[in-house]
Image (cartoon, rainbow, N blue to C red):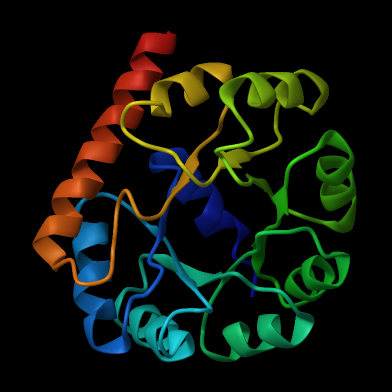
Length: 214
């Protein structure tokens, strides 16, 4: 199964990945639906959440219009487990060539975490579809600008960690393609309405930053 067309469409429409760290299976679908209704279609459930594969399976079945997958994917075995649960997106905090290769073999979108130009080029050579710039607290807009200067214009750069409504525009001006939004979007215990409101705020900020860059 080739997930790239859906990923490309999602990135063109709203290149924001919802990171639902700590979400539980019983609330996964309502939260996912709230995100989809707010215009988001990229959803990540970190594997250190409660029963993450159950959440991924539930959201994949209920929300076919969304590209759902896992974060904190550290091994090829974990890639296979996510694939078996219906997940189509593999996100990692680090670059592990074996993880990227397994994701590519299974036709999944893979966004490994990198911080340096050396890691970035190695991840792309392994087959990564884009790069998670992590942690964002260390990969400042200035670093994004420096990486953008040496990477191809088509390379997708998504800062993750510490991205807020206040600094999103600076990252976008520096060349970020999109973002992974975690605790600023969702914290365990938030209800669907609160997540939807936060999602709308981030999407509006992203669109405003794009207009400012024109």
